[in-house]
Length: 141
Image (cartoon, rainbow, N blue to C red):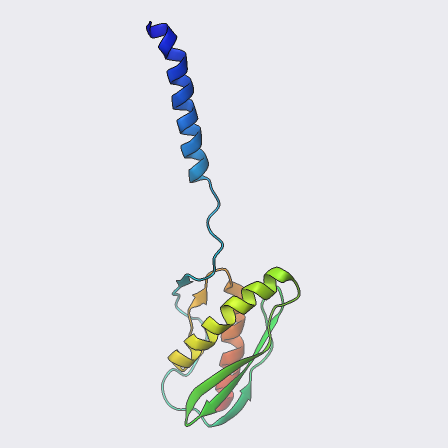
């Protein structure tokens, strides 16, 4: 009796182990909504007011394309950030850019600086955004 049950039990336990192992190795989600806070390494002016005007940042390499932004300052504050260039050469880059640009823009306006959180899944675009916006805001200081 025990010999008859031994083989099916081994097969079942092996199958369960295989399923659990497969789930643990599953690829993580590629959504870019979650953000990761990091300490920025770029020097920016985080206090004080900016001079009113429109300031164009330098072109920054985001590996999959260039990023260049323009900061619009009104009443001493960042009123708007416009993307002049962004990665869009292929469908994936365009999709990532379209999803990350509004988040980066909103964060910069809220923070009133180029010190923004890195967008998960759009790390190079986020870093290039910080570089270009820093250059623009340096002109406005």
